[in-house]
Image (cartoon, rainbow over the protein chains, first blue to last red):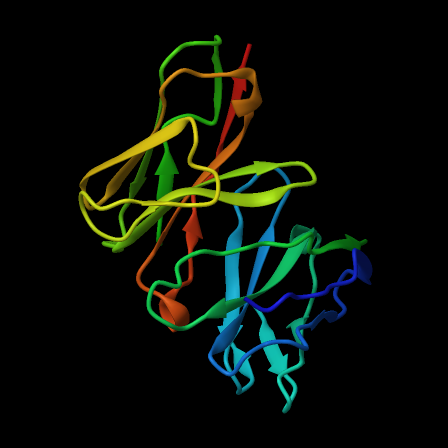
Length: 112
Length: 114
């Protein structure tokens, strides 16, 4: 599975967009980019995923570069409840691909 | 709203006790997972199940066993608890693989073994 690299921490002002980068330069063509987050003392929460195209849902937008070597998760209007550790992971699409391997993630602090 | 529930949020057990952690999902998902999470080590997969009565070892199955008698329920068993099994245990479920591998997690059980 491709290794992902994220900055260890970021700050964002409340109400502003939070842009969280992820580098996955070794990603293969059949690997999806998934984003999860984990709020303190809770289980991880699925946010969004994509393969090639940009994706948007009610929580966030995912922008994947054309060469697929990096992506950005965008929280359009960050709130204090978005303070969490955000994980970017590459997940194979083939049969038998069940496991998620989380790295250290980015600790996002939303500042009032 | 999708839901994965775990039997306890906090549990304290003694060394050598047999411990049962229960997980129930209401989404009719095929796959269920047990992870443990420790500071500095991230999330590690213990066991998973892709169907009733089926199970597969993850990265760290030693000292654990699992049971899936019904689709919605996946149990983790610590046969003889040891202090190095003190951890946060997380259960998850998913519909499929690859593009359908969104895993939904329970709130976690923080187990302390004394």
